[in-house]
Figure 1 (cartoon, rainbow, N blue to C red):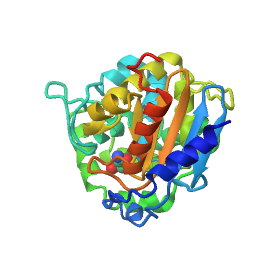
Figure 2: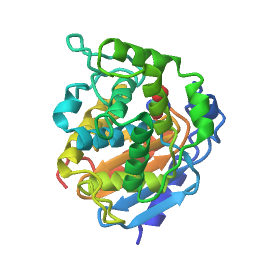
Figure 3: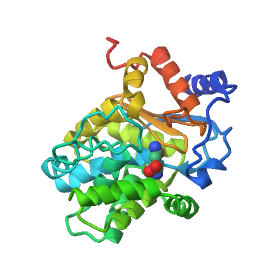
Figure 4: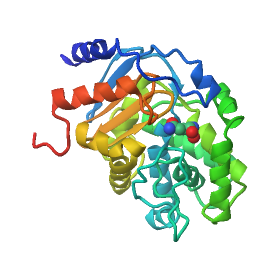
Length: 308
Ligand code: GLN
């Protein structure tokens, strides 16, 4: 296959770019090696290709959001989830408040306010925080096709400085959007963000979305096709926060970024793609990751608004 050589060449074409900076509001992320660089692609029939720092493990961060949204939709149904979290792009930063004026609902599940809420909706109604956390780890592991684990150092580092997320959760509680102790919700959400992944795990997770919710390597159905359609739609409109319009026009596939430097894109019926490079732009998206995806789109004709 020409794909490994192609990926290696794409990585070397962006390697020299040292612009951007690692996220510094989470101390543990600020000290990550900023030079790491990797890319992986998994086809809808399960062929996996990767190049660069493929063994580097990093925290999933906000890339957990679309997957936990999918689990919440699968576990609680569309009506219950949509009653709590809307699906409108906020055009705001990931940690913005962005609540709908009349209902107090977070505008979408990709910003933190929405993601803290969808975290509380995973698993059956009445599940304990522990059961809910287990459901999320099991679910994300099924997307990845292997057992994922929490990085306790990243978790402690973030929770000890999570004043803004605690404020968001308190407002959600005041508006009756979440129904529990706000600190419990933030703690569970932060743990979810601290799950360790590699670029290959992320490509597999994205490929499961691209393959109607069935993991293409294990063959295991993870979430129903209707849930995948909803999740990919929200990724396309809100996945890149205030850079969503720029991303959709330039790259043109549903995507999600994380502050540890991961980035995924899912091309329905075709492939899942992931990149890892820790330096971020002002919107919190990986600089070299965005550059790689722009190349992938033009080289492989992936843009959804383009006739192949
Ligand atoms: N855990 C991070 C936070 O809540 C996730 C943010 C991100 O990856 N954009 O701030």
